[in-house]
Image: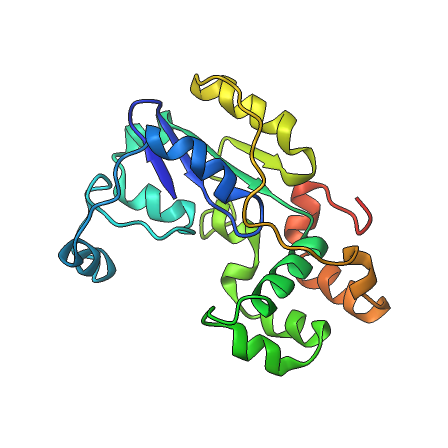
Length: 210
């Protein structure tokens, strides 16, 4: 998560949606990440509640900012994130984890042996759902703008205009190469995603082939 007081925005960094590219451009505008082990320990122990001193995780959800920012600032700041077709996002994360032997989840994912088992492993994980990053516990959307990876440059231009910075095309960083995501699915695994990710599929307007 990145927060800027100078440009009054909160950026939710979602996994596998080019958030690293956006971070490169936005980071110089944002509150510096508190340094030192003590700041990190206080944040993890929930002893620090000032958002300017709190060490947010890279992929913290919007509720974390809401709890720590003054209410008037949270409501005033432009809160945005980018999302991705859930069927494709699962494939991207699967291949990303398989291709990173140093990642903490690599061995676990490799041991699964196939993609369908990865979907089943993700189902009970709260952070496997984009919608959980963006909503209150009651399901109310707490962000002002949701861009789509599939429409990335256009939606990024909207963000740049809204926060008052010149538009720069996003660089390609941290990308994962894989076959067309549709090739990973059979009828059963496709329906599995349709069922368990149905809330965000409906909210963000996705279909299997879009």
